[in-house]
Amino acid sequence: AYVTNNGSNSVSVIDLATHSVSATVTVGTNPVRVAVNPAGTLAYVTNYGSNSISVIDTSNNSVQSAVSVGTGPQWVTVNSTGSRAYVANSGAGTVSVIDTATHTVVASPTVGSNPQGVALHPDDTLLYVSNVDSNTVSVIDTGNNSVSATITGLSSPQGIAVAPSGSTAFIANNGSNTLALVATSDNTVSSTITVENGPRDGAINAGGTRAYVVNNSSNSLSVIDLSTAVT
Image (tube, rainbow, N blue to C red; front, side, top):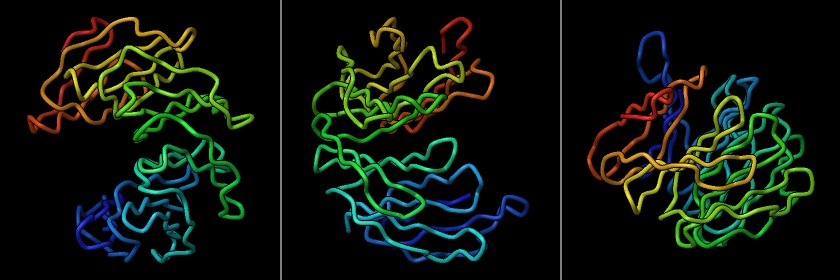
């Protein structure tokens, strides 16, 4: 496991067999998020303060390269083939699309204000980007790296997760203390579920039966049964 240490500009590498820190890697300024490629060979770290991505070689826990992106990078995700990484630049209102073969930015589509959360559809054709200050989510067509739709009716959206089936996107509404369920077929909010204060991030289990929402302001985790849509 890889954990960003925002105050010490480093990433802790945790041995899951012993639950101990096996290495500490120095990265850029104010690291925020980590995404590991499907092969497990590279870890991508967003450095909010230095407007860059550190690429860590997991075989030796060293920084292989640094990629300059937009202002204030936040969330990062990698597609299922490991060929592209996507970074939300909160200060620039853009998403940096990184070619992982060359570690270069190949596109920077403009989205809403203060983008933070990013999540890919399971088939990698769509990228969902939460725009906190616009109260929207931008849907990017990854084939041409352009915004194809905008989801409205949200409140300071942050973390996003997409069901394994691809039918529903789950969006943490930090401003209304709810989890929005969005039908990906028409990009509309189908329902909302009340959680605790300050939902910031979330995840869906592999079977698509449970949602987990981190509530930053209440120091809690909401566990949602998606078959009944209740906490």
